[in-house]
Each structure stands twice: as structure tokens, then as C-alpha cells.
Image (cartoon, rainbow, N blue to C red; front, side, top):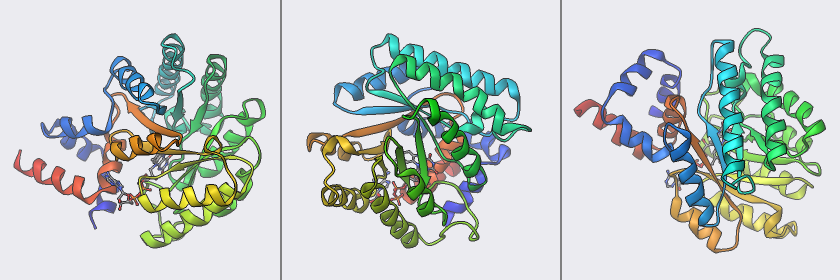
Length: 307
Ligand code: FDA
């Protein structure tokens, strides 16, 4: 019941101020976010790489309201690219970007987001790494997939994300399952209306499996973004059924979630990529993580009330 409330709160400025000021928030945020600055984030990335994991790094930021913020976010990703190259981490670490942090929701936002993300994708390619475009709420999907298609003309390794809770996603999976395509399949983390998305968890799970089948049967590179043990097991079965080798798909999980399972999959010979967010703009990301997990949410709300 509290999940949708928290997802709505993720977009409220007054609740953002309340949550950000509460002393109990910081240790909770630290579980999910690898620091506010680049240096601690790179330490976490190096530690994960040393344990055989791959990484995708998210410089936190979304829903910006000003063109100058889009430029700051672009520059942060350019600095991140340089830092990955300098640290010799470009092979293990790619980057995840949210186009709303590059101006997608501003007037003329489609072109603005494209023009701001292009230099990042170019710099990533020059450094020997790639970029994946995170998927945000359903109103952004057409624009994000169109920008993806533009970027893939020159940079075919640019990754996409699709969300199984959206009715449209099976069709998108068919369109994206071609050779060279890198597609992260997730269940979806935003509050979406019943006109466009399954509301029932089991429906979302069933859709996830249907999408997995399409991606595993296709010629692209499926990236299985889920902590759900059932989805992980089904992905392994499907990979076997479609004759995929271990380097022809990968698992992805979020920083701080099911770390032991991440280690187990690596020990079992699987490719495991950890999504590592860092930066000061952690509020929306943090609230979506709370909304996903009633245990985290209950603990946090109790602490907020008693602190
Ligand atoms: P779900 O939340 O349905 O949980 C199913 C089961 O998984 C639980 O019952 C439990 O067994 C296990 N589990 C889940 N969380 C656990 C925890 N904290 N500890 C122990 N067990 C746990 N979303 C989006 O809309 N756009 C995006 O671009 C992305 N990007 C993205 C990247 C990566 C790498 C991941 C892993 C996820 C995303 N997401 C996302 C988020 C995604 O949409 C989804 O909200 C979360 O992954 C939660 O869904 P799950 O599939 O993990 O399972």
C-alpha cells in the first residue's frame, strides 16, 4: 500500500526537504548510494571490479528544470569518463544516464537531451566504454527510444532499458532484439496509470518472463536487471534453452541489494554488472528503492517518526 505513496513522494519537493534533513536518512542512503563525490564512487567501483564484477555508474540527477543543470550533468559524465579511463576501469565500467537529467522534459527537450548526451556517448566510445539510457516514466519512452536509435547509428553498443510493467514493452523487445543491441530488462520503478501499465505484481512478473523469452531468443545481448530469484533462475534456463554462452547475456543488480547473490552468480561463472549510483541528487533514486521493499520502507518510516 505504501509503495505508490512513496513513489508520489519521490516527486514532492516538500517531502524531499523533510526526508533530506532527517538524521536517520544518511545511513539508509549510504546503503544504496556509493557516496556523493566521484572519488568514493571510484573506490567502490574498483572494489567491485576486483571481485570480478562489472559495473554501470549513474551520476544521480533527474527531472531538471534548467538548461544549465543539463550542461552540468553532461560535464559530470564527461569527467566520469575521463576518471574511468585514467583509473584503467573503462573495460569493467560503463555508464547509465537518465535523459531527464540532460533536459528531456524542458521545451525542445528531445533535441536538447540528444545534443547533451551525444558528447558523453562519443567520449565513452573513445575511452573504450559504453552508455546505457535508463528508462524513466512512460511519457518519455518514445523520445528515449528515438534518441537511442539516433545514437546507435554511430554507436551501436549504446544500451536500452525496457520495463515489463508497460503494456507496450513486448513489442519494444521485438524491435530491440536484433544483432548488436544491448537491452536491460527491468520490471519498472515508476508510478504508472492502469491505462499503460500492469498494476498487479504477478502480471508484471509474467510480462517479465515473456519479454525475457523474446530477448533471449533474439540476436541481441540481454541484460537481466532483477533481484528476483525466480527471474534469475528463469533467465538461466532460457539462456540454456536458446544456446547462449555465459558471455552472451549478463545479470544486473543495484548497488547494496543482494550483494551475496551478486557474488554467488560471479562464482558460478556468470557475468554480473552492478548499477552504482553516486552524487548529491539521491532523493528520487532513494525513494524508489524504499518503495520496492516493504522491509526497508517500514524501518525507515519508523526511524523518521522516532528520530
Ligand atoms: P521485486 O522488487 O519485484 O522483488 C522480487 C523479489 O526479489 C523479492 O521478493 C525478493 O525475493 C527479491 N528482492 C528484491 N529486492 C531485494 C532486497 N533488497 N533484498 C533481498 N531480496 C530482494 N527501473 C526503471 O524503471 N528504469 C530503469 O532504467 C531501471 N534501471 C535498473 C537497473 C538495474 C541494474 C536494476 C537491477 C534495476 C533497475 N530498475 C530500473 C529498477 C527496476 O525496475 C525494479 O524497480 C527493481 O529492480 C525491483 O524489481 P526486482 O525485479 O528486483 O524485483
